[in-house]
Length: 570
Image 1 (cartoon, rainbow, N blue to C red):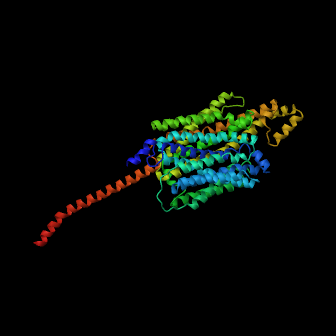
Image 2 (tube, rainbow, N blue to C red; image 1 turned 180 degrees about the vertical axis):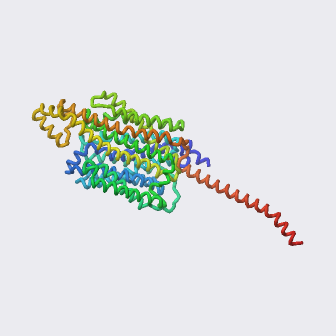
Image 3 (cartoon, helix red, strand yellow; image 1 turned 90 degrees about the vertical axis):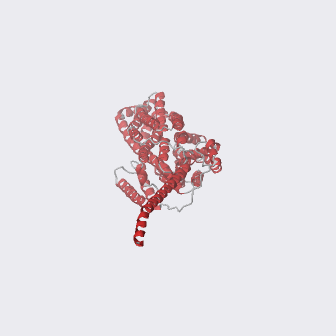
């Protein structure tokens, strides 16, 4: 017994993991690296896609699928990885997802055509989905919810670094080296992560049991979500929102998802146990995660457009100009996590964060192309701070609220709905922005035409480019045209943030109505042992109660037997 209590002194919540505090830090480094490369896979190529598609002779359809393929695979595979984590060895699954990612990235870097690139992007997404889900699930095995708060800030910071810093890294690599290095840059991090996890991550051995894989659920969920995400990604570009193609895709998605619900009710090991929605914390966290997904992924996309199209920055500069948001998420999430671990109180911090999320989006909805950049930076910092206080802590409180057997599927469920909300939100907001740009340009058509005519031959070239739907590098345009373009896109992006802001009200309400559960001081394995001990104790008490009832019955029957015996003798 004394030997088992020593690890608790070495680090929080480690009495059954057999890991020293140093090993926990090393293992977390491996998890953070794995999560970083998974996010980097989806963001690093965004600024170099025009160059990539030009080299590989791809068209607009290929351009769309290079982005959509990874997003689809990541979103669909996340809950599947989470369920597998509850059924089998999580360490092996984590290393497998890293291996899939590494191999796919290496092959993608040698792509000779767009078909090969898109195929490898699908496998990158599969690996990224595992890394996103499993990194947080494994964390629950080695650190208790009470102590996990301060580490959740690091996960939020890594997510922000990968989301915001990916385009900056990709632009720099493409300009300095070659676009193929965008696929190679994450390989060293992934290799180090695999080694660290193998050497330092020691998880409790799960008892062997018969496993039943919900293949029908996997197929129906994949089909339904894939159709839905493909529809929102392509509608408005490849076909109209109101069209036969849209009706068929949405109808197919609805049918598949309804069938998925029926299958999950009957499956012995469902991918997403619908019974979890009876848990108020989980259900409200799902609602909040959808809103957070729109805020997190939407801001990274539209802020980059704002910097390039409304402020005349190039790809590298736009990445640097979004650093205030990343700083807000990094600094405030770390502070918030430390406070949660110290005091064990999470609700007030998350309510404040959700209010800051709403305030940040609203303030960004007021910007123009010529707004003082100090103010824009302050607004970005506010939004980043709000996301930092809410995003990863949603996973923390869900892991604390569900049973140990459900931690994997619950954690991946939150990540799944956050990614789903972000994907759908970005597509819908993008369509709204496109309409807003057209309206604003129509209102300024006379001024734009006058500016183009005044430029002579140069004006004709610019006019032809604008008429074809292509916008030249804004910073290279003459001032007369540049001001009109910048003001148009500045107001359009601001409109998007103003439209997205009300969604944050859902986050506030969801967090306010969540049960204020106390954070556990036990790791997942410790909770499993405690639950088993409690069940055994209840069984013992029930047996003792039954024995007592039998004894009482025997005592009550004895006098009657004596009387009957006396009667017989007489």
